Image (tube, rainbow, N blue to C red):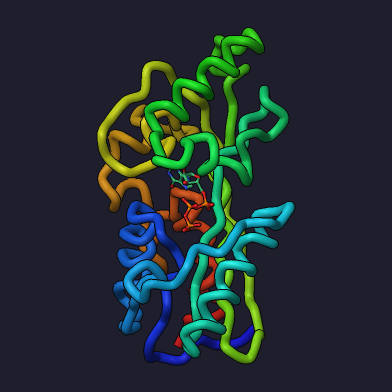
Length: 212
Ligand code: ITT
């Protein structure tokens, strides 16, 4: 595994919710972060067949265009009753104007069509694959997942995307009802384990690429 040296790090995302979370997670490490959106980099087309493919594609595009290391996140919600959908197409379900109220309604409709009404029939997991790419094309990737069930109606105004529908296993509040801190769970180095898919992936990244 290659260590990420202090300095400028491009956060290769155009999603404000993700950017906020990644900046929170990176805060203790002292990088000089700038997002792909802030640099005016184009959004690469996500043509990969897996979260890994798409994370690498986004990180490489930003590292090549900026000349700095870049961190990308490809993530999504995999619903068991829907054979893993929306999965890598989670953002697309929200349409071009990124309307997640609509995406959640579509998801609920798809669950109703499958007759998925009990919590046992409504299991899902959030997946986050983080990729760091360097301008010389070297890449490191890690993956984090969190299991839960989908509730209806959506609950809470915090977080982003599908958070108001996602009740993580062992909790009584949806990600939409949690502060950023709660959704991340314990910080690396503390006794509380990380909670969200992104925080879990990040904890592995800390061990492999960021540990001093
Ligand atoms: P970038 O590619 O620019 O990073 P994007 O929104 O297109 O932004 P993805 O292709 O990885 O990102 O799509 C992931 C979608 O999955 C995202 O738009 C959310 O709808 C959903 N998602 C991922 N992580 C989530 C989280 O922590 N909470 C709620 N929804 C999440």
